[in-house]
Length: 302
Image (cartoon, rainbow, N blue to C red):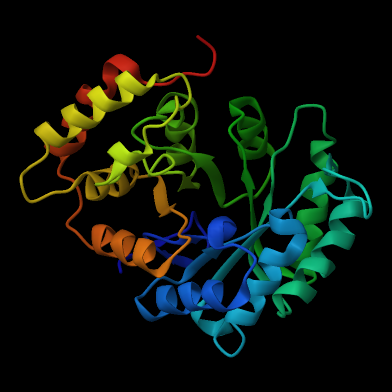
């Protein structure tokens, strides 16, 4: 598995990481998926304290016990659960983040986090205070680097301008190309990497994606999704599958360091790994994808 430098950090992440959110809460199958990923060359694991109320971090921590040095470990903070209450609230305060990082470290069974990410962010936050706490956590050795997970261009621009983030995580796929207009040029200019989540778009952009066309996706109708699947398949070389095209399309952008599809089974993981190990898209192939999806590119504010 090829590795790419994450921003201007000294972290090198596998071009395909593992988004751990969909692992489920049963430990044995989830741990087997993580171990298979590590054995096949994936070194980048992404979780969050929000996932399954911390259970996801616990499972990841159990899975990497004894293998911590093999892993670039990323987690997230900012969505605060109140014990005994449903749901969560947004809290990007210094006091909360200082407390939450220790809970994540305990669940992950580690004394440092490689990439600590703000799990959202709004323009109403005290951004300077949030940046200050991340910098303090770096100085304390509890985290190595920090980033932000956000689809809000205005928030991303503020962190690019005011902080030392090394990465931005954002939804990015053939079906959701918003980052191309809103943040990718800015990140490339500033040496910051994009981590692309959702590259397979809920499984729609896979070789069995026809079976996933049960409801609309973003502002695409089911017929529009089927038409786009056909166009992408027809324009791809016979040797390239739709899954390969979908995983490699974000990686054709220089600022993208990794895609992080999820996997809820070993079979799904193995299919993703096989697709990720295919040759990168050529410039002509990437351009053909853009042309195929041009008429229906999703934009949030039209």
